[in-house]
Length: 68
Image (tube, rainbow, N blue to C red; front, side, top):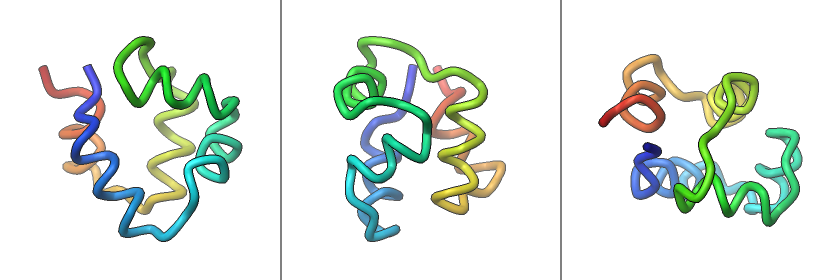
């Protein structure tokens, strides 16, 4: 399950708009919202793209995408 609060915090700090982030992750805006709101899970390629775009550390990536 995605830690939505932490991911939203990192997105806000980045200054990027949601639609831009969704596009960079290879998702539609609605598809990104579904994953952000835990309706669907992020794929490994999407996690990689988001990690690169938002400059996430390994610890941040783990906390956001892999914590229970």
